[in-house]
Image (cartoon, rainbow, N blue to C red; front, side, top):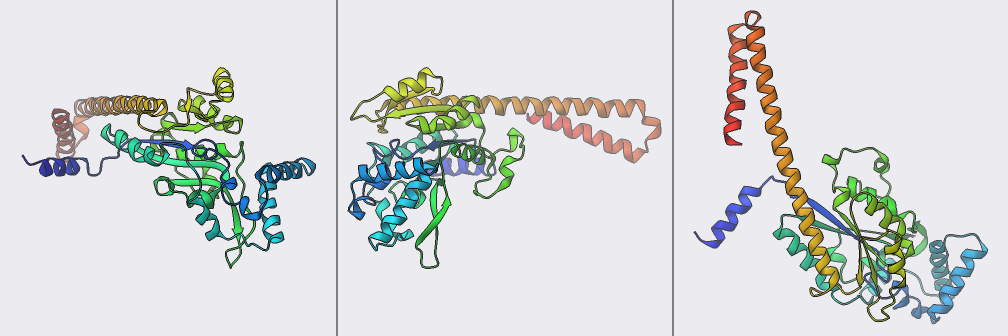
Length: 338
């Protein structure tokens, strides 16, 4: 049989079958990129040193009891007006292409997707970041991301940033884990608070992986780990400073930690393959359990139908008895196929 024929038969066989899902959620700054995304092009474009900018932003937040992310978003608008340089959506996306990425990041998604697909698992990738959504959307990895959850601006009719539309900090990050699990992906969708049976979720919590680098990721790390998922900490491979991940692991926040190198030969890639293998094994067990449960339910239904024939036969018409017998025969036929 020709190879193409075999592949086509496999495709036809799986048409209509839902492939089990897993979701990998990433912080961005210092997780996929070695620095804050604003520092590569945006802040230098104002002619100000990044350390001066962040000091002013932190001071503004402290003096005004202000969210740190709102503070730096305000600072960007302030500098843009001072320098006469409009902050446009297109500009943010343009500079996103200049954001540096850790080794292996650009090939990571294809490699992970391919490995998972071979094991019957579909992977969705999500960014959950305090940085700017538009910059991430302009980065080289944007095509691989199912959805970006990050801070963003409200834009005027001319496309100029005027006011924060979404601010993502370390506590608000957790809502997006629930959105991903339940499939209510729009930020305004209040149904994310509704209870949902696990068998209709977009992704089971235990099939979610969160990758981050610092204390700002703790709420998500803790949530994912408590829900049975996988929490991974990364550290800069150049500085090799492991202090944060040591603390996070000791505090029970992490399942694993590794340098932020995402190449095929890296420790994090090996660990992710183990995670995928484990998820694939669990999904196979779930499928087998579901099949056994279906068979058991059929047997229970058959026993009920037989009891009806025996105990209520006198009260049934010939047509009704024929219907019950046909139902029993149908269950028997299904049993033979099982």
